[in-house]
Image (cartoon, rainbow, N blue to C red; front, top):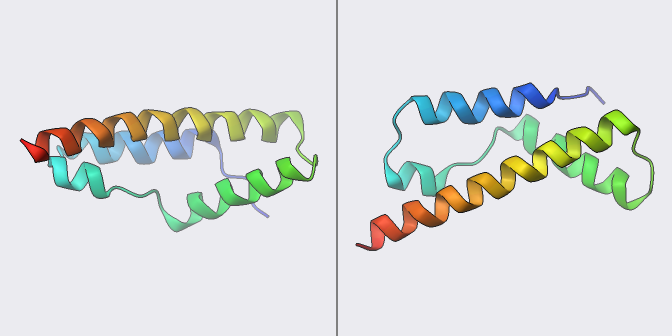
Amino acid sequence: MTVAQPIMLLDEITDFLASSPTPQEIADFRPSAVLERRALDLLQRNRENRLSLEERSEMEEFMRMDHFMTLLKAKARLKLAG
């Protein structure tokens, strides 16, 4: 499987945020299918104890970005709720 570089995830998120999304668009945001598949692959390989150090670092970056987006989405939903 092709390794998605962590910068791809950061680029995707920063490009999205630079587009001045509405609170609803933020709440609805999902990473691309390619990045979602990569994240699922890394999680599966982690469960099987088959990650290289580079892949572990990549998985941790996915987790940090997921946490960031979870917080951002929660704030967007609060704004939508009024």
